[in-house]
Length: 274
Image (cartoon, rainbow, N blue to C red):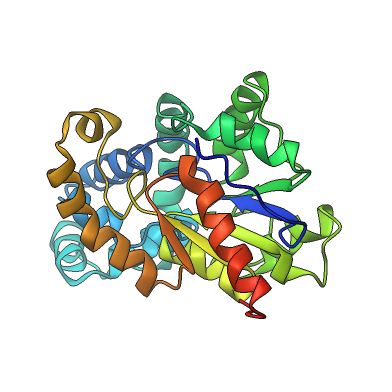
């Protein structure tokens, strides 16, 4: 891990979970979505399942059902157009499947616990938001606490009236951290467009993580066994996706956060704002 330092300009970091601090490749949600639709005779690809990633899970299901190829399959299989009642019913089926999958893929991304200790060393507050529901997250939160990670607040998608890309979750985190009205001192770290937009809409700086998250979608095993050239070639599009989503800085993984915060500190010193 780099020894880059930060000043008091950055006072808190709010992390996403899957693909950012746990579940390298954001694999847990993908398999669950594919199995969910397969249970109803609908074939969806991993690539399709990834498109709405970062949204609350109900909105994610609604977005999948609205895709023309999936909507056509649903019409043929069910005899009616995919609608909000279908999405709500699928969510009830999805939640226990997703909870099991999320816990299976809940290992921390390499380097994260070192980063957490580093942030504590500099008295930088830590909170989290997620597109997962509270039911899905409770076992992950408990497991993370046993490993030593205890954020000041975790906002799940069903904890607030409007989840990402709404800024409400970020605002709740900032209130807990005592930073209401100081959004320019807060950094959101995420691997998806909606998660980054959550930070932007709250007036915060944003850092996108390209290698560990949804934008690339590789497992840890794929990542460690790929050549440097293969990694760099694959990351071109992933990095561009995150920049297009509004990330102020893009890094490969959360392990690179100190360098990202140092880059943001340079922008702050130059008088820039999010």
